[in-house]
Image (cartoon, rainbow, N blue to C red; front, side, top):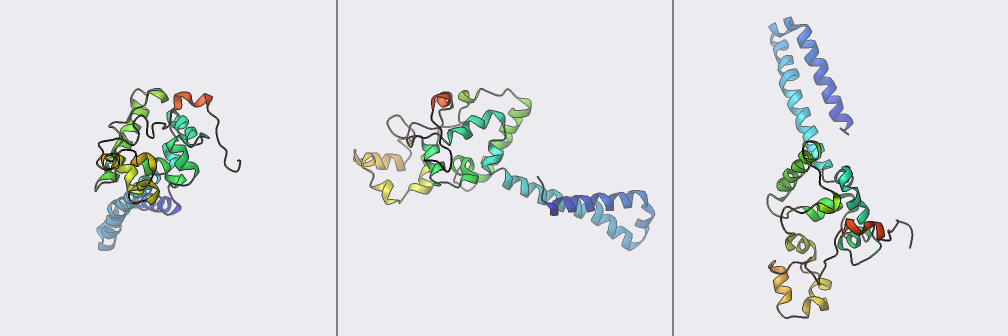
Length: 209
């Protein structure tokens, strides 16, 4: 939903554009030309820019990501009452901001990571409204999940660096840091959303134990 300021700018733009359209004679004066320039160029560009920025920020919210019907089970999977499920553990323990949980874990932490993530989001919207929507348990990542997204937060953490499973082989920690061994591979953190089994899962409700 656009902010009140953006709505005010859109309203002002419409009113001034209507005024210029109905009374074109006002543009014969210097002041009228300035009014027309503001009404037909400056205000529309400013309103479009502010509105675009606001919606791009809104696209980072968990609420926005889960607003598509096909993603609702992924939202429910964040409440699986089992710490072995990585998204649920991070969400329930505030290891990621809950209001930006999806975006935090699925953004590429590179120079153009935010841009790439938003472009993928546009692709999702295209599929939602003009393509074939897959079943929730058939949704796949466009590319294998990169350890970089995990290491953005975990690299350097004592709990991560000294975890006994990470040290059971001398080369394992280095392989994870270099993305040669996926954090989500079998035997590691392999339980992710698993929406196909969601109906059999016990779900956690905030405020309960």
